[in-house]
Image (tube, rainbow, N blue to C red):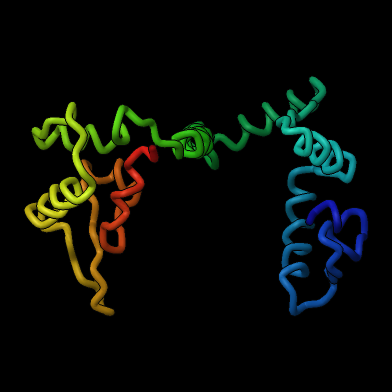
Length: 190
């Protein structure tokens, strides 16, 4: 959208009309935001076009800077040390690293008849995982575990929610689930 603003385009990539001057649209709000970011970060149309081309090729954009700019940035960083600590940068780095790892970890790995997460869960309960269990049997095991740990709660609309503990979290991948019938995704489709 920033590229559209810089190019003064009236039509987006889908062919829809875009009006950045209509105060009742999100595009207008984004234009105000973009002007602030553009000035603060020193961005230009050339940088946007370069980043867009790299993005379309699936590559990451690398900021190119000359040594003078680097020394100015370093001096500015040293002057504003009390405003912004290295912890802030580390936190941002860790957040992006966690986001990348999370996107990689979306795929389940299967060991024989079930997912690794399900087999680990059953093993932690002392169940034999060498022999394949039927889905209803595993469902009952998970149900008994949830009831024994008192993890099933009702909300104001009387819907049942399971609040996952450390053992259930790898299976359901959420801290809170609406019921627990999703156990079937832990099976390999054969």
